[in-house]
Image (cartoon, rainbow, N blue to C red; front, side, top):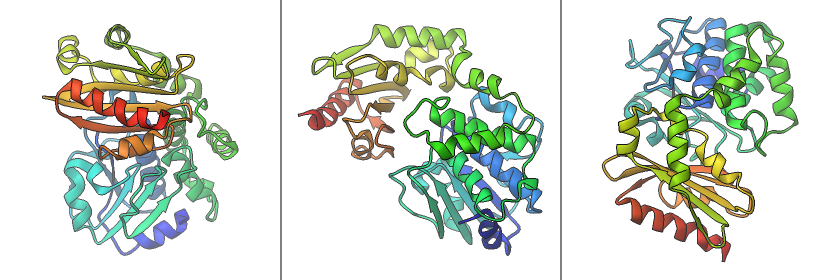
Length: 321
């Protein structure tokens, strides 16, 4: 589906909303802000339904008051879902998906369920933000719809999901998209610093706790660590303060798979998994109701921490036998 085809699908509807997965990250927010900007430039009123956005991403929309809403300000006639493998990932916004007259699913996760009326899914794309850019490029290529803030949002999403162009999901077309976007006026280098290098004091302390709790299994081929909710609460840490830790674990030489868990609630943990290729972590995460990509995936674990760790180690270890 090109951007022009998306416009045609949305043409009959006035109440157009965009939404992404719970605990939105750089690609989720970047693709939503970027697509909303394109739709607005094309003459369609678009609003984003989203909560709990990390403070590091506020710069993407802080000069656009009213763009992001916690609740719809009118009937949700059309809903575009971004960066989400299934409607359950929408959390509290899932009911609006089922009520909408038109639904669109734009995503790059291999575990995507093709759940909407219109599905735009490419597991080989680096990010949903890159896909939004391609939709514009592969249509009429009307770059007049791009402006500085829209280009900045899409670039941020690409940077986030590629680990600043380091991950294996980075390809030629990814660099071409980024090259086209940085022709606009925004601080491209600072965005990379914001996403990966600027750290709060809380984030450094969370990393220290994760290193203190580090475990190795199967001759160091599996590296695992965790931080509890009580530790995070004591620090006053936010979601952004745990980001990047699983990649640090995966960078350990000789490791095939890294697992990092952090507390979300009473006996509730978010598990992030990374692989160098030997382990299909998407298959592991899918077994626990999650999903993602072969080398990067996640899921939510319910139950005592020790049992969650045991279950994940068993699932990963099964692929290393």
